[in-house]
Image 1 (tube, rainbow, N blue to C red):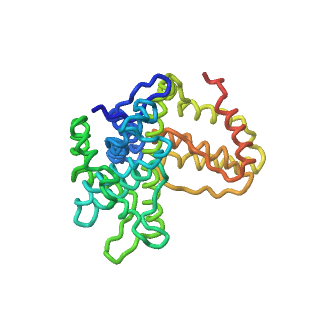
Image 2: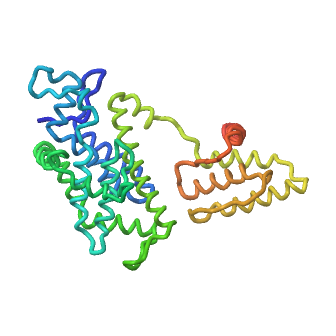
Image 3: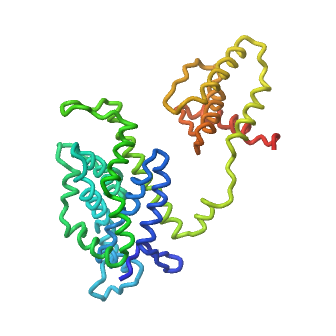
Length: 346
């Protein structure tokens, strides 16, 4: 049996399930590599739709596009069953089963829970580990009956139809996977050293952000591959010949613009001193920094000056501005766009 992930509406073409899992694994791995968790992203992608290896889901999918006639016994009413056939729990249970056994101090349980949460939630939004009443929501999901999650059936079907994919997953989810993932988590989060010691609020928040980041890697990768299968032209746009502005070009344009400022007045001299001091710090290590300057001190261009140089120093992909005042956003966006779109230096 050929297991399918999607059937294209325009021409009725099939996307093999193994292709979708591999594609999403590659994309999620690339995204997660930004925080050195590429293997975690790969595992998420390879297992997120593992539940689609169930016969019931395949019948549902083919019924939905008219491959199975309503008069046939194998027909599953797509309207009645939409969103009701669980295809996300199987992969979550699989990764939890594989990883929870590693690590004497629960390292495998932590890593397994992070990945299982992302997989189980990729169509619903992140589920809670505990319910409002303190009930063990995550544990209940991991103990969900295999008759409902189809895990055993999916494992058997995957081994029969896509043995290379299953082998890749088995090799990936070993003790070395846990060692690397937990080591990377320790680099970002200060874990308690003693049994009775709790996470600090800051470190608990950091761990939560890591989970959300990995979740976003999976969701973005899944949606990108699904959309690009339905409309292949989307991929050409995403990975095509579009040229992004080089950091060096943006830096030169901004520096040229800054040299045109008058520095005769006292306030402009102070603005210039602030801007130059911040620019010198841009070559420093990545981290979280604050710039405390009163209104009118030139924070917009100063922070942009820092951001462009810092991005270039650390080979980063993007600069994101998050500002709470929409009027300021609109005003500053116009200024910055005019500066960076200046093509005099080309």
